[in-house]
Amino acid sequence: MTGAHRPGIDEAVRKLTAREHAAFVAAHPASARLAHEAAAHWLDGVPMHWMRDWGTPHPLYVRRAQGVDVEDADGNRYIDFCFGDTGAMFGHAPPAIARALAAAGEAGITSMLPAECVARVGAKLAETFGLPFWQMTQTATDANRNVLRWARAIAGRARMLVFDGCYHGTVEETLVRADPALAGQGGARARAGLIGMSHDVAMTTDVVPFNDLDAVARVLARGQTAAVIAEPVMTNIGMVLPAPGFLERLRELTRERGTLLVIDETHTLSSALGGYSRAHALDPDFWVCGKAIAGGMPCAVFGFTAVVEAGMRRVQAERAGGHSGMGTTLAGNALALACLEASLDELMTASNYSTMLATAGHLAAGLTRLFADAKLDWHVARVGARLEFGFGAPPRNGAESERAAWPALEHAIHLHLLNRGVLLTPFHNMMLCSPLTTTAHADTLLAHLGDCLRELRSAP
Ligand SMILES: Cc1ncc(COP(=O)(O)O)c(C=O)c1O
Image (cartoon, rainbow, N blue to C red; front, side):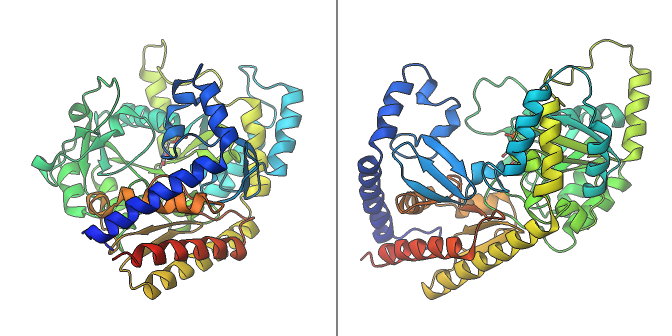
């Protein structure tokens, strides 16, 4: 079973999916009723349209989520490996965050003034992630948007360089794919399927394949690139690991060409305490993280060097006043700051990371064994507490990863697992291990996945 699908397997996938759809409907009457009621007032019956991306016959409505446990409106319980696509990576409803929410809720949520704790939290961010200066937003999207604006202003250049298959939130400049006609030369085309976008990405962005240093060097040599924005490990088109030396050379090239390096660790915060950049001494100019940074409370941060801070001061001094065009009213509010501090103090601890990484290592070894036993040439990729399995050999860039994807099989596997009480992220095959995830949870996933693969492989 690889990207070249066998007709027998395709038929088995179809049959399994049809059976699991029926099983889902039978087990979720309360969710079905809620879907019907909610559709009267919400687009597609959900408060955000992508909540329909699970591919289930109707949405699953959640009653509560605590630790690794999610309970739906029908009382079905799940072991969660999705964790809100990373927002709840340190577990659902962590007591430290619940306490911070209650205290800050009482003391005032937002005042357009910095909360008393701000100096202390800044020092903790600097200590944990190794960058001296910080700003806050409410989402990683917005942090990236702010960073790209600052980078353009500081560098006095217009263009951004991204890697093909990247995702950095809904930032217009990054909603791009490589233009196949310009292989490795830069340029960009808008991602397929964008709704209502008028931004001309070819004017702002160059896209090159991940792990392609020649292409990076070619684009940067034009002297037009304000910043490269990258995840250190691509995680949004399957998982693509950096080739040995790639990130180090990327750092050198950006320095040589006066281009700022933005490392987006919204997902790779899973790597280690302090993120991938700290663990691998990447030394970025900007460092971005959202989602889990404040335990799932809407909050994101971007850190930057003293040189960047000096650039910001220069830009501020030189501009003619007026609105900066950056910032949202609730960014940096007291509630988010309190949760950020609780997360730094009690979630992002050495002991939590050590547990998460050990469990993820156990799961990765189990998956590797499972695929070997089933004689499948599938691979397992891991960045700390975050894992992916993919069909075929490990991809070297986004296009290779995309070519190996098999959405119908992924959906069949996800639905099979969901109906047996295991939640995987609905996009590709991503799994997270929280500090509360145990090897027994991992073994449950492995057992059900093993059953699913056996059924598919027994197809004629
Ligand atoms: C690497 C990366 N950056 C930024 C974002 C955007 O995060 P948000 O949707 O919370 O703004 C995502 C979302 O998946 C992401 O994966």
